Image (spheres, rainbow, N blue to C red):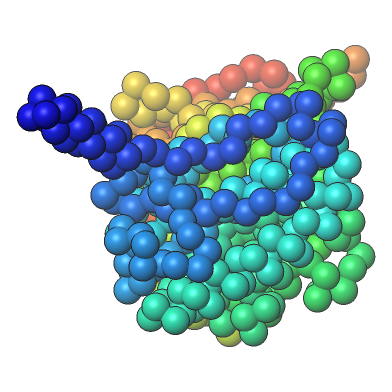
Length: 451
């Protein structure tokens, strides 16, 4: 009998230990589920600094059952989008872990894979409203336990962006922040604000656009809208259909990768308010005076530092460019060129900065620049990395017309001004550029006192 009691006690301890260590995971489905179709089921997985890698499945009605959940802490909801193959998003682990590094908070991953996994996209769209109603009821329970709506941040990807908007509208726009990562366009473009994400759905709404010509939403939706690389054709993404499924989803998914970079503080991408991507590339939108001493905003998680001025401006449309891989951020300069050729020259410029064993490259080739005698031509140069101390500089001029006679470009002066750091511009005088030949020289601090 004593032996039996000992065995029973050992079994109980083992069961309790296993239960304590049990981790709930995101629903993993496959293509067969999507083909058959899934019925909506919303699961809420809680992560905190005490259980960063081990999710806890939350009750929708009894928050007291979850001692890890602290209603006095801010809460961030992460909401995925359409899952045509049923597989879990590959970025989930990274985003929840990075959020918890940034702040002591509750991170709740909204798993609506049963509902999003369906080859019938229209069915998944229908389920966005039901998912939003489910989340709305849960947040009201949070309020009953002392949570503040203003401390809630919702990060929604694609369809998840509109789910966030529906929840915000249900709660009268009192949620603190909605971050929308390439909000879905199909079935939402052209609809009224009550049928999609809208600037009134939260106290602060920031939106990233990366695929406006296909899966994403084109028009501005938030207090600040970021258009990465104009919102289309992200660098490094496939250009032809022969690349398979990545051709269709790479631009759309890039939104998450860019946001992860901002969370990880890998680097900060400065953004510039502008009416169009063309004007941005032409360097017509480099004035950030409207943002005061803080200068132009940065894309991503830390844009809230500019929240007050952005709210006063109501809706701000911004642009920035990126590299093809992480770190995605580029460094912006203004390049001013004065030539003394008798005839007008048209062409493209490649600029290299050398320093500390590194080389940064900027290729200004979106259109042929026009160089007139004694006339200053202003170019917007975006380098793939930031060289803190520039030792040398290289220039190459090209007309882009291989069959025409090669010309020379005589530079009376060039001036290179960093747009993100307040430092003296770099200058060089009297340079002769032969077409397609790189010239390297040492730039010097500009002599002008007013820069």
